[in-house]
Image (cartoon, rainbow, N blue to C red):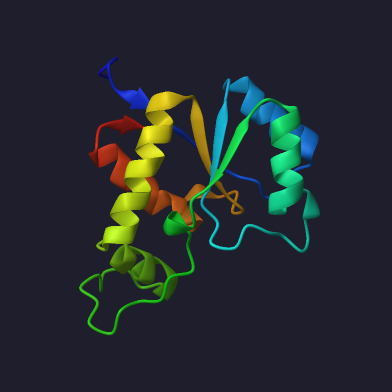
Length: 146
């Protein structure tokens, strides 16, 4: 493994308490969290609503950024070339990854990763069932350890 490669982390908040969540972030010395939820809220887990999360992170000396440009819930294009993706949500996100807004968003994420020990977050705990897996694949191709 190339020691010069940069590292960025990913996490799904899932059903964790805020204390559990912050402990996980601290265990990796995270200093910036980038929220990649399209809609940064949770009815079931209000501790992860944007306002509550921002306050908890601020109290823990972790910067919060919301990159809606990397948010999920994208619909597939009618003329999608990403037909290998059977699930519409993944096909839609793969289509979206070919757009300028995605490329601008991922460049911003990389800049955050260059500046601080960064994690990008969505709600899904299982990484391969989340659009974070596609973001991760993109970053790996760009030379990042994820």
